[in-house]
Length: 295
Image (cartoon, rainbow, N blue to C red; front, side):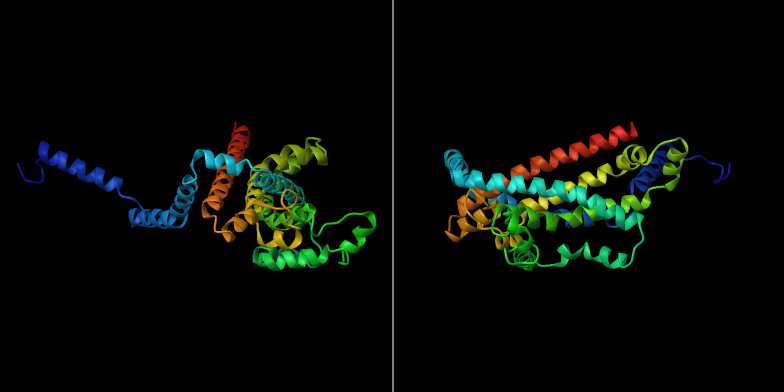
């Protein structure tokens, strides 16, 4: 019997099987383990460690001190303004962001590319510059404020200014979330619905809107999160009165200026927890919407 006709023994067969399994378990991308380790290290250094340090500083107050601090009227008023204005601004951004994205995708008009580029202006514009521009624009003697003043409507240095500033910074998130989905929608579905006798409102509500709802929800979540943490543009257009137009980020800065680091960390920790809870709820709603579509 020749060597070529001989069969490998059990030990050699097990060794070859182990080698084959080792080859199949190798990742396609080289250096994936090293890249994953570097990613986790950088993420821990930038996100997890600062967050843990803030929670640790807040824990120095104890449970009783945390409850007494967070239950004060000033802190509760600041959270009421921040959460209320951020939610209302995100909802406004969702409505008008969807409208702007629809116009940019489905219509052709002069200077459309310029209008499309201006959507990203709040991304590139420093927040302090945005606040100064908005406060000047909506001041009683400003371009828009002078039109609103005769009707008794004041925007600058009021809580309405907080809402306007948060809408300004949150609108691009919705537009840029919905716009690619509208561009990728197949026209055949709308044509088929039209041939089956569906009207324009039915086509939008039953064909287009379910397709863009997940991206619209994501844009709403990002606008809401940005509104909760916005600081620069708000302090210039609001009066920053405690309980009236003071936001949580400004309250944290005030605590830091008074060298109350534990108090600032406690307020920041509560804001972090609320933000995580709200974002988790929004993500759960997104999953439910996707599952209902595919189901």
